[in-house]
Amino acid sequence: MKQIVFQTLLVMQTLSALAQAQVLPKVVVFDLKKEIAPEATRITQRAINEAERIQADLIIIHMNTYGGYVTDADSIRTRILNTKIPTYVFIDNNAASAGSLISIACNKIYMTKGASIGATTVVNEEGKKAPDKYQSYMRKQMRSTAESHGKDTVIKDGDTTYIYYRNPDIAEGMVDERVVVEGLDDAEKVITLTTVEAIKWGYCEGLVSSVDEILQLNGLENAEIIHIHPTAVDKLVAFFANPALRSILILIMIGGIYFELQSPGIGFPLAASIIAAIAYFAPLYIDGLAQNWEILLFILGVILIALEIFVIPGFGVAGIGGILLVFASLILSMVRNVDFNFDNVSDTDWDNAMASVLFAMIGLGALFYFFGSYFIQSKLFQRLVLNDVIAAKVPIQQEKQSESVSIGDLGTTHTALRPMGKIILNGTTFEAKTNGEMISQGKNVRVIGIENQYIVVSQQ
Image 1 (tube, rainbow, N blue to C red):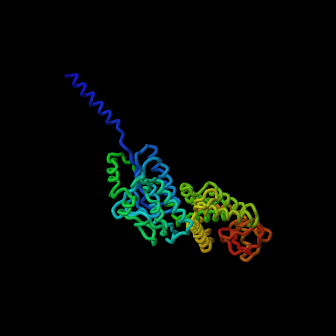
Image 2: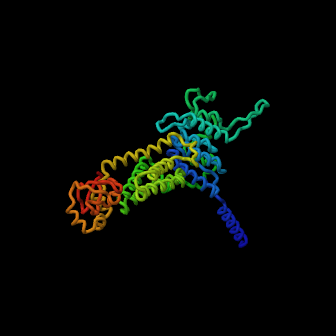
Image 3: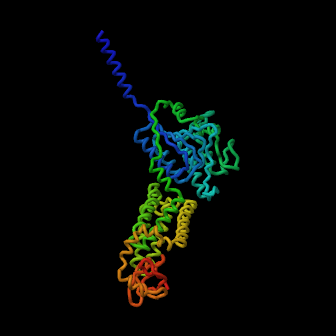
């Protein structure tokens, strides 16, 4: 009896160990439910990397998108085609434009009732059809992606034919209305497939209502599900990627540099400029847009401008070169180029980049024109720059000497005024400032007032 009990316990222990040793299949799931943009590329890369790390059995993309950037769609497509892990897509309503390219790259496509896939014509920001060179590129991308899934062998009446699992003509017709697929469309519009049509023409494996249903159809209902969500960094990068915010950051960058050069040693404008530069370049660098050399161009441009102002008299090659480098770096960092190869940069990308910089410059010009001198003299600015410390630097003897200075007196600048410096009146050196303008050394000036023991002048 004891022997039977012992054997029973041994069998149960063995079965328990086997059950524990059994490894559940792993499925990685992530969403593409927004515009296909750098954020979508990042989450796709992270999801596939995680799936390969844990040796997952399947990757499922839960998709609902109207499209996005061709460059990001191509990056996602390439990553999907290059992974050895089967990748399925669940189209929950829409897989338009860039979304259809990504979907066709997947091993299997599932769609909900009333969903659609197609309409992949490349358009610009205004919704108008882009030039044919972009259409040609997308046509070939769609066709080659459909062809990548291979052919099926069909033997009929002794004849062997090979039929693509996914008809590449349909994929190409999603871009070009001139491509005609007999029995499916005419030559008047690009192809968009409903769920029923997609199933009929081999572009959908089945009608489902959820990811769980896909798992059940593929015998993975007991799989361990690993959801990949956007991180805090992804959300922060997406926030700073807003074109309007980029214009504001450019304004703060350039404005901070300007006010710091006007009043050297203050610190606050420079700190604001540095923070804005980090907020501007960091998301672009993470997205793979801004390269190291483009950031270095910006730094070099700022250095040249500073040298022109503080070291080199007048305003010449260094200053102009510095301004050009700053503007070039701001624009180039927003377009995806590799070693000055701009083949994949669309006119829309150029327009967006230049518009962001242009709007920032317009806003900066308006700010300087209407508020430049008033801001420097404002109580807020004086508190920020610790005006009491600045005032303490004024020689005590100037308070007495300034009593002999009258409005309208003429003199020359002993040092450059940016806006503070020194002037010579009647052979005597005085501390002076302007109302925001910069005056080079050796220029004629006129006294227009006395404020806080400073003689206020303007260029004559």
